Image 1 (spheres, rainbow, N blue to C red):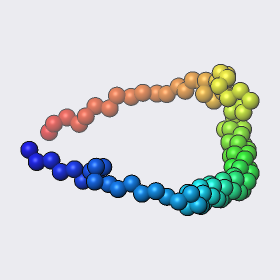
Image 2 (cartoon, rainbow, N blue to C red):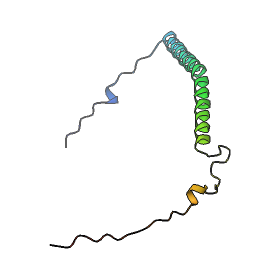
Image 3 (spheres, rainbow, N blue to C red):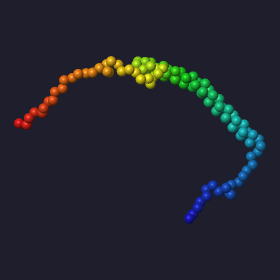
Image 4 (cartoon, rainbow, N blue to C red):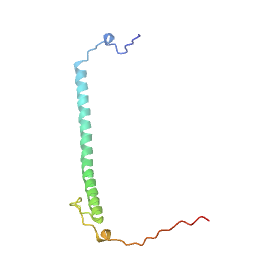
Length: 103
């Protein structure tokens, strides 16, 4: 079996980074982290009120539609008494219709 090791660590050379370069890399990483935090915080300041307003609007619409459907928004799962229209008995006259006889 042939085996190829593309990441051979034995042949890699380790180089030393000067102290000033490591401080520069850490300072750059810190600045990038602060910028990402500031962008996320500013988006949160914009989006949180929008989400709250959208949720309030959706709740208002849902309650309005529940009231229009005859459901109490405070207790939507209560058992309601059947309306008189639903409880009425409908009388009908039934007739059996025979198929036409073969001629």
